[in-house]
Length: 73
Image (cartoon, rainbow, N blue to C red):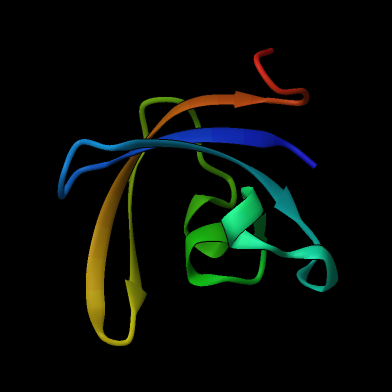
């Protein structure tokens, strides 16, 4: 149930999302499953960590900039 803000290194875009169970996942609403490639890549991450995840053999790099229990905290 944590909120996580990341920067995608490819284009510098920033995204905030909530980590949820696979059953409630809805990426278009900012709800990312802990079992998804992105969710798995940030498991155990700390602020300032850089992580890599793959989707269909394409690698993506993100930097974790904020982790909180509620939006904005």
